[in-house]
Image 1 (cartoon, one colour):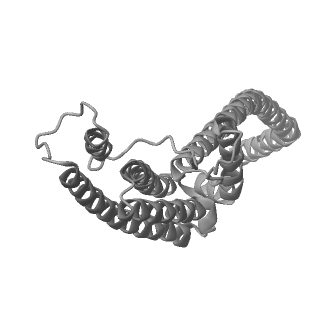
Image 2: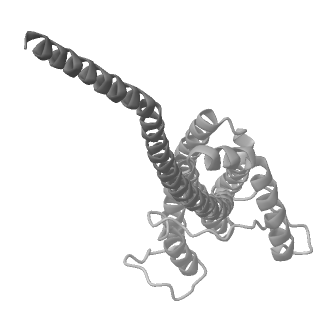
Length: 305
C-alpha cells in the first residue's frame, strides 16, 4: 500500500468520517462496532456501507476541488502583489495534493464498485487526510499573504527578494523529514513541502529581517548619539572660544579708552604751551599802550597849566 507523508490535522467538518467508516467496517467484519442502526443482513450492511462511502467520497471530492481553487487564487494574488514566482509560494504543493487526491479518489471508487469495503474505507479515510491537508494549506496561504502585508518598506523588499531561498530551504528540510518518515519499501512521498511549512519559513525569515533591522537601528541610534555628543563637545568649545573673544574684546576696549584719555591730556597740554607766548605778548602790548596813554594824559594836563 502506498504511504504519504502528511502530518497536518483534519478539519472538523470531516473529522468524524473515519470514525463512522471504521464502525461500518467493523460491523461488516463481524466486530463489536457500535451502531445506531443494525442492518438485518450482510447485503443490507454492504448497501449501507456503500451508500455512506459514496456520499462521503462525493463530499470529499467537492471539498477538494473547491479548496484547491481557493488556495490557487490566494497564491496568485500574493504573486501578483509581490512579484514572487507562484511556485515559491507552494503552487506545486497544491498540485501534488490534487494529484494524489485524485489518485486516491479513483482507487476508492474502484474499491466501492468491487465491494472491497476494507479497501474502500481505507481510501476514503486517506482522501479525508489529503483534503484536510489542502484545507490547512489554504489557511496557510492566507497567512503568507498577511505576512507580506505586515512587512513594510525595506523589510518587505528583502523578504520578497529572499522568497526563493526560503522555499528551497523549507523544501530541503521537508525532504529530510520525508526521507526519515518513509518506509524503505516502495513508498511514495510528497516531495513538495506543505504550504503550512512555507508559511512558517516566511514567518521565520520576516522575524530574522526585523531583528536585523532592529540591530541596525540600534547601531544607527548609537552613531547618532555619538554624533550628538561630539556636536555638544564642539558647541562647548565654541562657547568657550566666544567667552575668550568677549574677554579679549573688553580688554581691547579698556586699552582704547586709556589711549583716548592720554591723547586728550597731551593735546590740552600742547595747546596751553602754544598760547603762553601769545598771552605774554598781549600783556606786554597792553602795558605799553597803557603807559603811552598815561603819558599823553600827563602831557595834556601840564600844557594847560
